[in-house]
Picture (cartoon, rainbow, N blue to C red):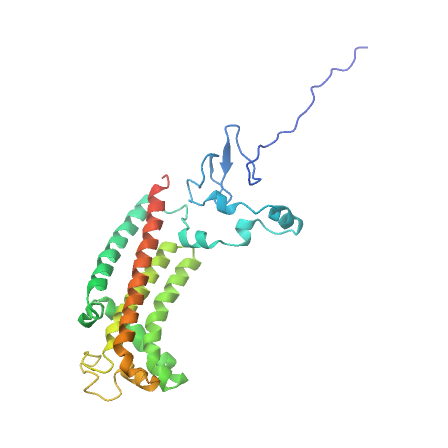
Length: 271
């Protein structure tokens, strides 16, 4: 009888690996993004779809084995890096979406620069329609903080005017929308510019307030005259107004820079 035919030795397919230990998915040297799973050439240093930088996702030596031994999830799922939170680019956002954001950023830049160049005494932010957006939150703050005493009830108006934009920025970041977070920070800066003239008017009492009267005409009606008088800081009203204005300017400039970086990354990403 003839000998049984000799079957060729079977081999199991293997995958090449890249320095961070993740497999290549093709013979031509490709890699799959660990975040969005997009397949692309290995030569790329950041994902062409979601923009994540691969080097930031590489575990430190020894961390990968220790994590697997402990049954931990991959690092990208275990913790969200600050850079990703601030510059995240969701893959579903289209180029048309980016164009709309660019127009919004242009309006924010023009408006923001106008606010920054205007002197505090001009109350330009307080005369814009954005003041009408800030005002309901300001008045609501008086009501919400009233149960905590007269001082906090008066201060609560300005606090709420600042807290609302801050919460908006945090909510957008929580939903992985950093551009929306930048808009929230811009609004926070604008609210500071809106408050600065009010603070600086504490002693003079010449700013026209809600109800068509000034602080000098009605006793205990000007928020910041009452606040600074109780703190013993009334003589520092102009200084505090300038500091508030500077803080608002810094926040607006940072927000414009932040939003600009996000848009540049979004336009550079292949469609």
